[in-house]
Amino acid sequence: MSPQAEDFTIGVEEEYQIIAPTTRKLCSRVQQILPIAHKALGEQVQPEAQMSQIEIGTPVCRTLDDVRAEIVRSRREVIAAAAKDGNKIAAAGTHPFSSWQEQEITPKERYQALMRDYQQLTRELMICGCHVHVGISDRQMAIGVINRARVWLSPLLALSASSPFWLGTDTGYASYRTEIWSRWPLSGPPLIFDSLAQYQALVEALIATKSVEEATKIYWDVRLSERFPTVEFRVTDVCMTVDEAVMIAGLTRALARTCYERASKGEPFAAVRHELVRAAVWRAARYGLDTELIDLDAGRAIPAAKLVEKFLAFVRPSLEEYRDWDEISSLVQQTMQHGNGATRQREAYKRAGHLEDVVDLIVAETTKGIG
Image (cartoon, rainbow, N blue to C red; front, side, top):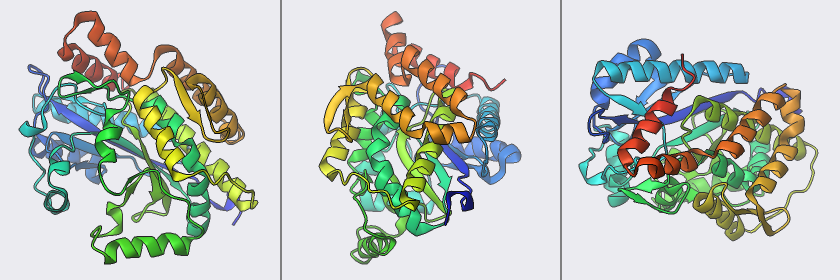
């Protein structure tokens, strides 16, 4: 199947925090907010594992303009619904100081099953990510995309990182969400798969051994979606601003298409060891854009800015074909100049020394650009 035969559509899922405006703590109000949000967004808005979270999913989008419009609409409606309940919405990978002990698990069978199976890991699942689906219906070719995309997960994470604080402490990480999530047994970067059959055989073995109940509970950083004909990228924190969310969506689609085109030509790819890929993702979670990251192609550490430049060069032909280059390269430059969400949160904390000010920043940036 040629690249032109695939749609390379985009779907974005964002997880948000529900914030009590006076205390700035998380508050378990999703059951009150959902019915209001459903009136505007229908099934595009859903609960998440914790009752202090709410998730949106865009419709299938064909352009980045569509993505921007849908994220703006979704954020606007969820923020409005929360406001009617007297609360606010924040888009960040972790809450700066709320405790997991004060949260309630959503009374939905999927999340209750997670609680039964994973216990303390589920109680502490107080994190928010962004998942980007790219439409690729040929599942064999999608495996080729995953094999090639796994070496570029770290710059995506570094650009999106928005979770430096956890339980009132600066963790020293740009994406502490990644570290919380990495404790789950089927998380992190995937291995290389020789074929779709090998991928499916592993999924079947994981289910047969009762390692997972079903395939949607395999949480690799990039995987085949079980619900849609897509490759799903799950590595990034939820972005604080709409601009950053659009940036991640554009980069992800361009990465998927670039990898697809190389796979369709049978071009070889670097069979980088799993340990190095994990190390690269860990380093992006630890340092974000602040120091050196791992260039898996060259097998050495290089400044984060250089790795981001190399990533942009890799996906540039695809971005140009979609006429997205000017917008995405500009948004990347803004992030490099002003810092990712983690950097901006730390700067807010340094200004006043109060984590409540960090929450205020996140809430303000979540509304930025929604009109």
